[in-house]
Length: 331
Image (cartoon, rainbow, N blue to C red):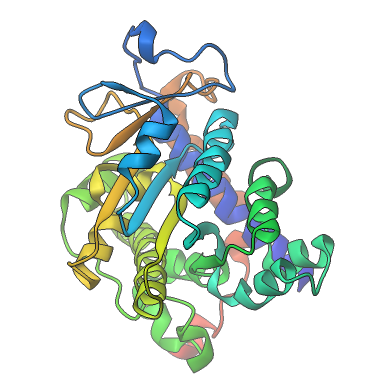
């Protein structure tokens, strides 16, 4: 079981990294010295109109916002540096801030709470929550700050064990889950046509429409579960501000998570902060300016082929889902 969990965890982590590579491989960054970081650990902030912002100014503007969605380029050190500084600044401004994370799923909430309250050590915490492989370098500072200052942390995401099977068999797979496990994903997952779906299809289409539709169902299971987790927490708490960290694609343009939050509770105010993406004609929300990630693939047109080949040769590609699809009648 432990080996299977590691395999599934690596599948999800690899899928996130490939999506990040697809998003960033063709970016051409504008020559704006005021918004150009000095080094790879540095970042700059701005408005959508490229007006430079200091962190304290941004934090002040976010004071009365209900939900702050921050997109990240996974493994970029400057993003993770900003995430810690932003959490600390928001907490110093409002003591009722709550941290929400893509990187832990709902079934891990109990173990996460145990660690935050000092009932278990870090090693069992990492094992029980199936923490991402880059936890120690990128997310440990957030969790340790939350633990030190008694900040609640929401394990917001859907379990990779379920999402992997939705990616393989489609959204109908969810209806064959045990009742308890159905609670670990959003009650409703919207896979209807939208600008977000069009963007996803453009990035992830490999020539098989049915395969892409299943992949999108998996993506939306993540989005809608995170959004529902955030809205549910706010419904059960008073005067709380939530800051949620997730991959940039989940956040950009007020699509993904933000769109579902607004659908679930239109009265909530939502702010977006995501890496500057020159491929978007009019980017919504505050922007994080970063030095580009190192080029992962040369030539760049090999990216899609690499993702397809790696997805089919990984051991988890043939790992069984529960229940067995042939027996359950999943199509």
